[in-house]
Length: 160
Image (cartoon, rainbow, N blue to C red; front, side, top):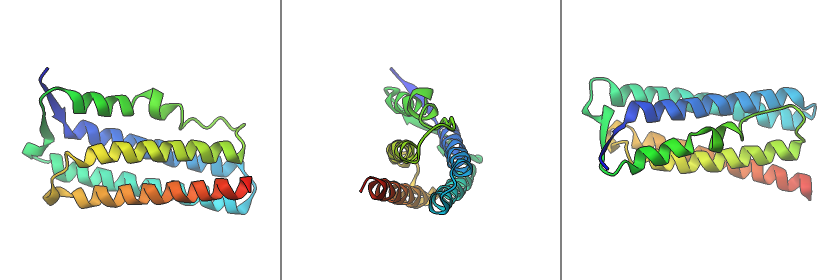
């Protein structure tokens, strides 16, 4: 199976994930009274908004009149993989904030989404050439790893 991988579409997926992540953390921060939890969740929301801006910038630099807007995906695997990761099953359910979650449940959802983002962005990094910002995707991956660590540490402190 031969297919064409559209970089613009992949970056749009990443942008939407970051938007949903920012909204999830923002909505959750409004729900809790604990100042430490509020600050943590608001901070994560702001960081996700920054990632969204980075992906918008990367998308524009890669797709503006560039041959990189289309990449070769000979067996259609990359497109199918990224599509499955960004489907409602992977991200939408995890990023739905209902308002009845405990702090622990919100932190666990955050950890799940951060893990999935790291996997997605690691795959995305493969289609970004060095000269067009692969290091920027690497930086976002490292930041998502830091988010995961912070969430896991906070979850651990609540349990212990």
